[in-house]
Image (cartoon, rainbow, N blue to C red; front, side, top):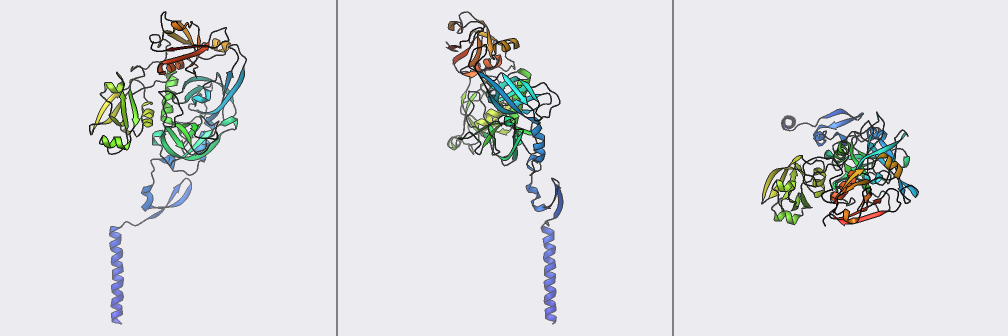
Length: 474
């Protein structure tokens, strides 16, 4: 009996000793009650570190709050287009429909360039069914962003979020107002960032879309992509489809780029685009290995423009841009989108790879003409190169002629334009087949053209379309 008693005593002592040792070296898993989103739940402290409270937009699983914030600020846009007929009227009246986002309480609305690009009669219908005639403040085909203005105060609007903080896998909402069906809300996740799908034309186009699987259909173009706290993180622009309807992926212009375009259009009426002054291409693993880089993340410089910003800072062909302002550049689309947020004259810090070393330079960005000056279009920017000055149509002229474009106000004798027999008073309505609605658009389109120019338009009092074709360099 005594033997069994001693054996039991040893077992109990061993158990107590094991518990004591475990309590000294292993933290207990505590279970506590917590409140989240109005729901009481259990939280295991061992797994609490897996949550990331700094990205609060990914926390809620309910989209009610975000939808309630976004839907009053998303509007329907009806853009009427006059086709055919003469400058005095007639022809067919067609229209396109899209969505827009109110971004300030005093009536500024952002939408897509392709929604309004051919229209001279734009109507906006708010979520509460009030309808207004909108003024086109400016449009940027290079990013597919346009800015409208209606005369109203105290409108519900969306606050710009930080698109850089958006993470793949994060919940988002796509909000549109198509065909006056009132706001439609769809949910999905961010499936990729920095996507280039080659839908925008022009050498200065910027494509670095946020890709989501939230359903976006025709009529939702120009609508809002919001996170789950109702911040605007993108403007819905495109879908990839063979049927014409949504088939799985949609794409949005990042809000940080949209915010800069809107700021430029409000302040200057035209986009102040900055350039590094380089030709770039994505880096592949073979080239990265040859250059001694640890991975293929970076952007290879294949050309350096003479007198450009990069040339001034000493960058060379064959350098690899790794970071700008301490932000990694993993692709050409990411670099173009990030640089596109700056104006000429602003500077950035560039880290790049050369000769197996990481180097750093501060670069002052320039515009397409290698100038650091920020300026709005004056109409005489093309006199030295082409030989004419432009001006905007007055409101009376627009109403009388039912045209939008730029008027040729003067022509230099002996210039390229003079050789085409173009006369002052010619109204330019398209440049190289792309419609222009203002002097600044015409100037930018001609500046961005590589060499050949085709200018189409009308003369007051004549119904025939005139075309003039020539080269910028004779």
